[in-house]
Amino acid sequence: MRIKLFCICFFLLAGTVFAQSITETVARTQHYEVHGNSIDALYIAHQMETRYKLYDQIFRFGPVGPARPLKVRIFVNPVQYTNYLKTHIDEVPPGSIYLHHRQEELRELVLCTSSEEIYDTLPYQAYLQFLRAFIPNPPAWIRQGFAEYFYSIDFNDDGELVYEENLDWLVTVKNMENLPSPVEIMAANREDSFQNFTGLAWSLVSFFVNSGRGNYLRSLTESFMMLSGEKTAEENSQEVIKHILLWSSAEDLNIHYLDYLFSRKSFDELIQEGEAYYSERKMDNAKASFLSAMELKPGNHIPFYYMGIISYDMKDHDSAQQYYQKSADFGADAALIFFVMGLNAAAAGKKNEATDFLRKASLSDPGRFKDEAEKIIQDFGE
Image 1 (cartoon, one colour):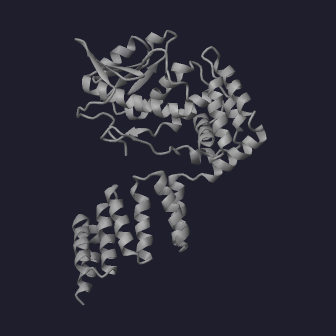
Image 2 (image 1 turned 135 degrees about the vertical axis):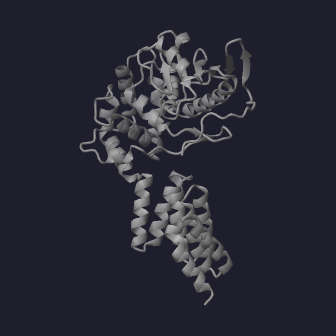
Image 3 (image 1 turned 30 degrees about the vertical axis):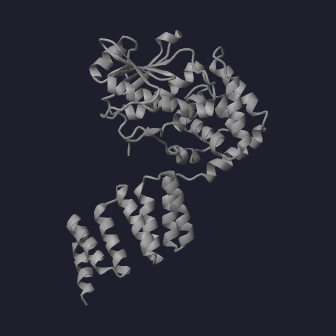
């Protein structure tokens, strides 16, 4: 579920100041200058600064930041957004677009806050603005791979950052035939160099950051210092490759990359694996799969539901109740949860509680649960 990016409420943010003109508000943070509606400008300035800090945890381009603040321009009205962009580009994309110019003062990220597409486009455009502020011509795999890596950045209703690891490309990449090597991916400077290039670039970034082999993360972060604003994308790519291969041979790099890639499981893969283990009555294995799925997507109801089923089977009725309730909190089918909570309460000897849950299930979805719920309730009286 996507959290609303822009809230209606107004709140003050430490370190952010306003400058008001007749036509627009400007909200300023350490690294951004956001032009637009006062409430949106302040809120988005906070979000952009939060994104910047997350990016910089990996790239470490320096404490000073870019030479001038990164400019963001906000439109609420889609017509105004379109008309403004038509003076700069021929085709106007929905949601957001980063406009990169040789002259730094002309560079800006343009947003339409009323567009639903902003949720899909902003993660890439915001990251691109950050990256190209330092490296105008970055290697293609760093541009595309980290854009996917950071795609899952979101904000809750309190404006706090929420991040779940993005594994959307994992299955696609694992199913590719003739996977290119890491060096081949790093050397590619066109998105059409390989099929599913974006996914391949993401997989390489995920490997460097999450493999647990410290030499790879270190070699990657050090290689960023080799990037130059004066070099072409191809020249920057070769500098990165050269530095990374100081730490590991191309052969070892490829072996470790493949080991990592095929050791990872997506959320769907973990759920399917857990279901298979459960059907085989391998409860410990099933629990491990569902708990791993829960770590990947802590706000998804599915693993909580299955953990409730396992706890019920193991006669741990208190744990089952808690897992079912969590599943309900995260959006599970309400009628189904009422029904299984009724079964769980009945198994625990709590007939009154069971009756209450079963009647709620019956009322919520009589077509599925009325007959069976009433039969169970009648059996309580025997």
